[in-house]
Length: 334
Ligand code: ADP
Image (cartoon, rainbow, N blue to C red; front, side, top):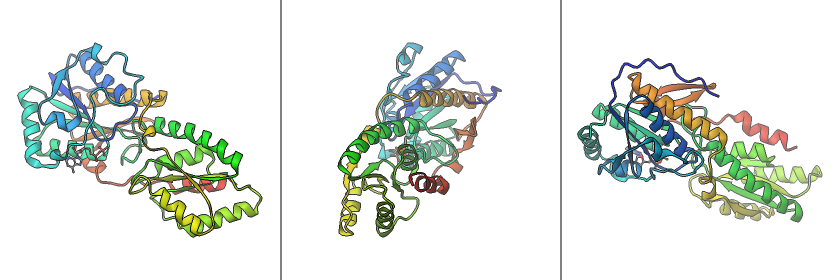
């Protein structure tokens, strides 16, 4: 349960629009539903923009009724579809997007996506004075200014289900598995999953891990009679599949390991109860923030409360991973 922001409406809104952008995440649908139904409840018309900024720049949008978001609260992906739109990085294209919103009589925009999408939202708000509110929609939980993001909880649960199965094989064959989870620049998924599955170790891009140290720890575990099976959870880092390189390096040090890359299965699937509630509250809070006259801000979670944070403080910043959690993985598996 979250504490919702107080409603103190000072901005008159006739119509708003909503889009999902960047990598999809489970929970985007309940967020769209909450934006649409909260706005309609307040007498505000809502347009759903197709395929993120790609749809916005060509005016691909439809007015939504309450029934358009029926039966989506439990569905993964995004009803509005998502895309990566290179052109939106161009100032002239953003000018065109602002003109389209004005032409259609749309007073404000809600953007649901990750760091890149929120950067686009920030630029649209500052360059063209369009009221914009962002929602953190990414499985990576790597958005600065919020404790949680839409889809993280579901992605962790999906990865855990897979790893619990891999553990059966690891135990039966006394083998070591390197399981690669998503996380380009951050190890939030790897750390959460590592703690929850009782991993022997985690490898995250946030902290330097030497192959020699992994081998040393594995040898120490073996000497202490902990058996030779194990799970090392590896965040993908700069490129998916790099874990194969780590396996080769380990092999050159005499440690055999099998590799399993979880990949896109972590993105899909029905959102968890936690993500449905989070997304619903964030969607409602986004409409309240717009009605309260706010713009160029993201709605996030801080200590169980829905808060709004200036987008300029959110984008292009690294959310630090708590090193105590990484250390806890090492302590708890011994
Ligand atoms: P995510 O939002 O999941 O981080 P991306 O980084 O791919 O995903 O960004 C999604 C979209 O946001 C991009 O395709 C682009 O349309 C827009 N975007 C990203 N970075 C910028 C930027 N610097 N300026 C304007 N738009 C951007």
